[in-house]
Length: 184
Image (tube, rainbow, N blue to C red):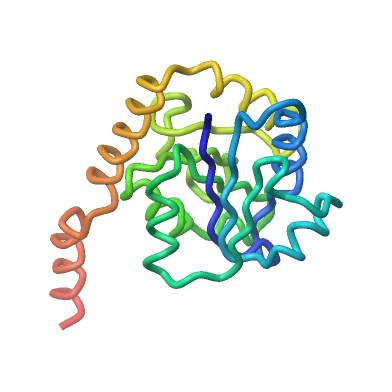
């Protein structure tokens, strides 16, 4: 069983419509993937895929949750999801949710938009997809399902190693202090 998680607001930048449909296709006969969705209300998710009983296809919509509950769900996942369209708003910088998930040891399935491709080594510390098409996402998910639990654990460990190398305050302290000294 593969556990995916999404935490965010679909209405602004994120795009999970086709991912939901890919999961439904994969889970048609049996639940092989669970997908926890935090943020969007259940009615919004139901409307996206046109079914009433989300849980029947392994999709769990939690709505808005307090931060600590969100973190608890995210850290139990195998992979987080960050799918964006190749548009100007998505290129503004690396998503906070991407960095936070990696700091929890949760690698991402993400599009090569917004700088994530600079940090994700495909299949090593996460997974890059070239687009949000259902066929692309379904193939990626099926490939991930072929991985052993040990391989998934290794990718999760690589994600946290990457995050500790790149996203900790210590990495920026010297640069920040240099910047401040020039401002005085």
